[in-house]
Image 1 (cartoon, rainbow, N blue to C red):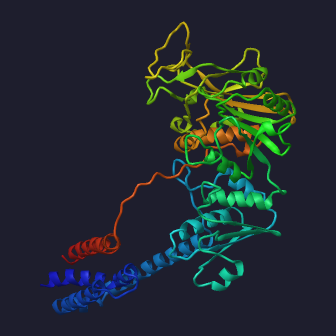
Image 2 (image 1 turned 90 degrees about the vertical axis):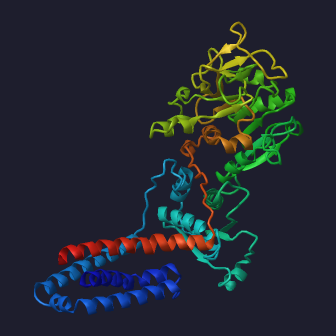
Image 3 (image 1 turned 120 degrees about the vertical axis):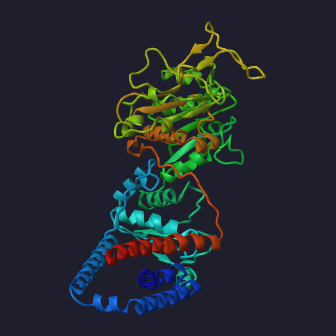
Length: 522
């Protein structure tokens, strides 16, 4: 009986000491679990005292008292060290992002904007602790503040602080994050339609606050069936691309060159995205004059799009093919895939991130639906570079595609891979030189491909950064985590939490102490 009493005594002591943990798990409510632990602990200890009266007297005599006090002192020192470590961590927080895609790290563009702050930015966010957006908002605001202490924020519960809600005219359905810098103010929401995430929304707001004034415009031509800046059809819209440009601090405007004598001076760059109908000679002359005067232009011209820009591109050293790129052995023969091994690693569009770190090849594959070849002409300027190309197993089909879509490689007419898919060039020397980028697919940057293939987004935005001489913005953007969900109701979640953090560790602890004591007493 004495051995059983010793084991029960150990288990009872562990049960009593674990009552605070149980209260914490059950939201500091005395549930039946807590009462059961208290009752079991008292009964078990009482049974131990009754069955081991002699052993209890001996425990408090001789050397056992000294070793017991020494153990208590060591435990106290350990708890003190844990408390000090916890205080240091709380006072000086930090983290290391160990995810392969750096999903918990701020983007390079965000860090550069924060580094440029000259005066404090005051942020007020109105979210309660029980709202689903609260943790996300607090997490991002903490990251921004950790990088630059001039970024300061306060979180207000809109239910408890009705005075602040009334003062700032906050509405639950409207923007609930306020940013102030000097005498300017911006308001954003967590699901801002003008950006692809909260980090991008905050960065875009900081750019607007700290910018010199009106944002530069990226102009998209219209009037010839080009891809639109918004709309319900994800295969015909560039909304995600436009949002990213706005997040970088630019304004996106649609312009009709037929109604204008020339490209507006406000256009920092012009995008011609898949015109289905030919541009007029006057419009082509306007674009040529824009380039000659140091303008920046991006052309997206797929196999099914107009070839009216062929002469303009040829004068710049770029050959727009009259063909269709076929990807042999791929998921779809009309979806050409770039070969990361053929990227010009010395070009600024790639060298900034490829030379600094290794990037897995799977992250660098871009997809060009309905593509045509785009080559550098013979004798082109030294600054001309073929930006992307297919694998050797692809080819450029010269014959029109049949209704059934079946094609076969003809060595006498078709061009064997690798097939170049994009070309960039500088039209002169110095800061006033024009820059031109041509992609052989207008579906390359539409919302469907832009959102589905991550490197389509990176390549598009990095090329635009090179066009605008914003090389510091060239990067591989953080990926979002793929959702991996396990749906549990409240009772199941409570049981898992209780069992894993309370019952299971205590059973292991009681079992270990019991074995130790049995061996010691034997």
